[in-house]
Amino acid sequence: MNEAIPRDYATDAAAFSVLVAHSLVDPEKAGIMGESQAGWAVPPAAVSANGVRFVILLSGPTMPLGDVGAFEQLANESPGLSSDEVLARREQQGRLTGEGFDPTPHL
Image (cartoon, rainbow, N blue to C red; front, side, top):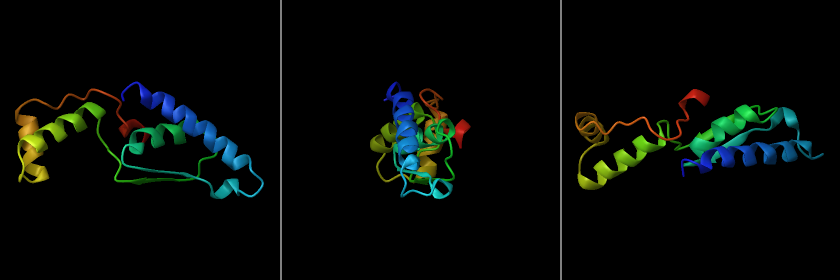
């Protein structure tokens, strides 16, 4: 998925340009919405597309892709732990990698 993210947001930005060019769309009220993994694609798409007026993210990730994978692995290994306990274990075990696409610079 790491390599797909740049291609995804380039396609999203192009689709947005086509949308706002339509006569039935008010470009002053047009934005981009995404859910879940779209949280990695929507922020850079909004930056690269011209005229995006707003962004809506529903349950979007706010950490690098590699860290999400590490969190999921620890959560699966330790059922019943709270999110805070999983995060604490992840940090103790050094699984915080910072690797993969990171959406935070675009937020």
